[in-house]
Image (cartoon, rainbow, N blue to C red; front, top):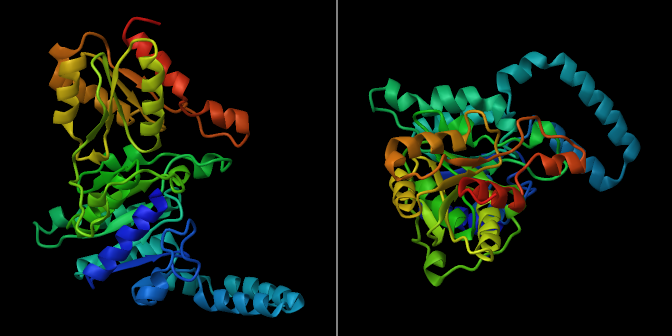
Length: 370
């Protein structure tokens, strides 16, 4: 099962299970999602439960009609008229805006009212426009209402680097949201993670940040019959040991789990057995799982795509010092993205993110075998 199909099937089953669940976002309906995650759901559940949120629906309908009729000249004229109307109607757009800030606010308000929205961002980079709604409204209201108003909402979309999309579309937001109390942050790796954690997220009564990865959408993973069961749910806050080892613990999340597993195989060929932990959940973090592994291996390396300063690896280092100081035989190693905005040029982009060889190198340094 691909990660794309895993998320799609989880959304489908939760829409069928609970009438309070609905999906909204740009192009989630008629276009079936920018990455086809919501494929077939509009046809099955209707526009009330799979809601497109374009900036102006009327303009979108007119553009589609003109394109279908093939009247290029008319389209150009309407495009000019559209630009003129945009300039005249700025105040209306401020009143009725449906860009990320606007539709995120709609989603949060509906969650306060008892619905269970799944709010899709085409990329988490776009969610920066909506961060006030996510942090100041969704994350804080339960505390500020003395526990009376909860916000059962899932914010989801692709996070981190894809390919050739440059600095403004490549950053990892894991550390940003993990920093904030009131949120739960999930970063799945494979189809089992994506399916089980998406279902858990939709059923959870707290706001969930669900950080997917575009590169993983089309990757297929083996799944058991248990994973395909409609009641299959993974617990939030529990990591998974993907590979047993005795010499070093490697913690990672999302796409970097796959890179860590590949690095572990290369290390095994040299007699180094690495234990690989798929964190799955970044907030809450499964500290006991990390401590138990470090107690066995006495060495720890964290791998992430994000920037090094105040990143997930920084938190892993702090956790290791607090929980496992006496068990560590060497400083914790970190493998991160480069501390620069992501370049568009292919070779510079490649150099900006961890490789399998980078992981192998840091593991050897941590073990004193470099």
